[in-house]
Image 1 (cartoon, rainbow, N blue to C red):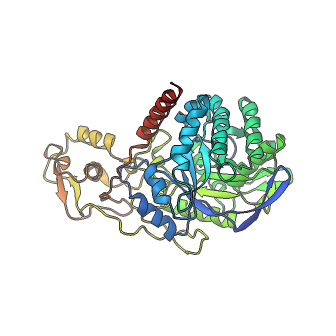
Image 2: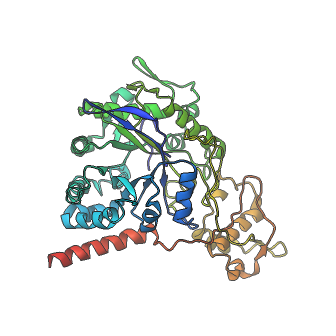
Image 3: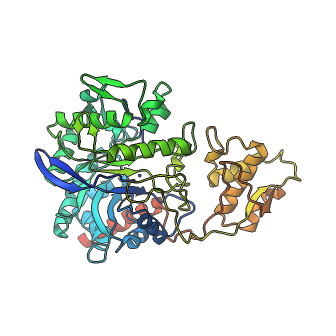
Length: 486
């Protein structure tokens, strides 16, 4: 994710019925509320527990970043509509080999769909593959991969039901005001090919919009403009006035598409949300205000100045659960986007507009015993630095940093938090709380205010880590293609 130039990334907020137009052709489609379900976590809930969480909250659409077999099996028979993702690192193989595309579709789509199966509606070909920071690394693979996958869907008799999309970061387009929106000059050719492909196959344009990142990355960005409560710094664009970053960003995309002749293309918001920890401005109150404001705004059917009365086709909130093992390269907040904590407990009251007035917690979560590892109060902690470094290099200590919810618990509290994070990650192994005698186990919850000392869950999930999965998948795919050719 990166910070867009003008206006600033899952839950899918929908409007019951809306008009969707494909290059002048009008059709009626239902939209629904859904979420992004990421699985880069040290403490994973059972997929069946997460599916029950989705159903209890009446969430009918979910976006996955990879084809995790355990997740797809859990979704079978649930009635939840699925967008399944393909990691960027797999695009090269899929772009160069129709047989590889056939194999991917057979193993990750055909194997799960059908009566009583997973309701896969979209395949996301890559994730933000045109991101500026990638320096064009994946750019040339996208269209050939889509072409091969489309033919694979045709051969599998699934092309009429399952659509290909490419989630794009909002940095793919730019403009000083929304009406001047245009795709980055180096993307003009490939975006022309992409939107033509999407239009001819009845697919929407998927974009990730993150007002938080605009605020986080620019000290001069007006804070109130990131939300939906009104602003003292509106953006004036001719006859149109923008009072929030979401609408301004969205209409910048509309203008960019219009310049290519696709101003009526339906748009899905693939990711949008607000983190609750790990940075200044990332907190429970801000996340609740932003997400509730977003839902209310979209459900109002108001639309935007360039597309009045036509809200996005679907809006996926980022994210369902916190992912404590994600890279913190963009910022410590990366591990704290969930509307639920890692264990499926609601962080704040949120009305999704789906019938429940607030979020319902996950049920039957299996926790480790209620015990924690803390700094031994009877020991000299002057030599604790290396132990802290070890613990935080392995476990998640992002809440201890500036702006985090545990930033003010003091030096000894910091040590205890680090020790406990490591201890829980090691499934409360007795030796993991030793730290050369500096740690000790307690049965009294050391949590302080908003700083929560976690207790791990007993299910660590038998699935591979995401990185391992796509590496193994690529190797198997290429090997089977080679074997088939031989």
